[in-house]
Length: 371
Image (tube, rainbow, N blue to C red):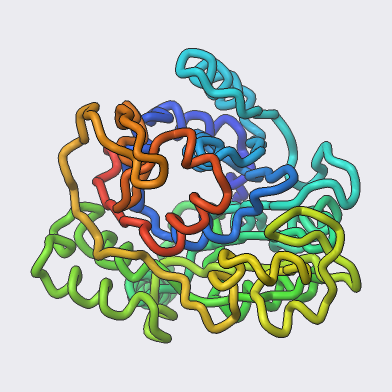
């Protein structure tokens, strides 16, 4: 008999109670994928993160001027998030909600982010993905990730199967099996997305770094600069070898004959634009230099190698490389995770943050506080 605990609000609340929003922000790229999330989150219209946890991406993306809301089923977590945003001066919104029955109208939002959520449904992700498709507007972008069957997970599963065989042989009666999550390979996750009606623009494995994090018991043991894990993950993250990475990532759109342009938000992008671009782009925006970042052949990657367990940056004065004004670095988000200096005002300009997210993103890995 399998006991399903994956949708138990009390269990999830207890887990989140051991962490804080600030600690989750500080881990930066402990879980990878920031290069995908920041590149493909729409700058126009409303975006939601379905299953936002402690809200680190909602707060981060709101720093870029993105209209984003967080949805989670834990009332306690939502209360904590609303309190934290008030104390720290954020105006993004958080709602208690069920991602199988979202409180948004059909075709009403431009972006849907779900990071490590849909794999927790014992009956599969289909209902959650169907709801995501419903609320997205034509041309809307869905960024969905799940755990992948990485090399590390594969060996763990083989070990578990061997143990179960031994238990059957000796007729050992163990505890009831608990269901927590599935692991979906990129092809399987992509198939689920297509069955829900999405046009999958990217479907691949990612985050090789986290495999070595798992192997090192979630420490930097195999990630320190110069180690095999560090060299291997940095070299092969943008190759087919990433299929053995810890996560599966899909970037999908709600395709239609006429779609909202990713670069201006207007309902004037035709399907033909998808022949050249990863996302819908109207004729006017195709002349915008930013559109070149979204050509289908343009690789999505970090702009630098990983920085492992750096000291927290103290507030310091810098000069913005976009407007030449002097500013103080952010107390919580430090240098916003970019290798170019940018003030908070310039960061909110779409043409600036798109360039930063594609050309100058600086991956930072810090150990997560123990749970």
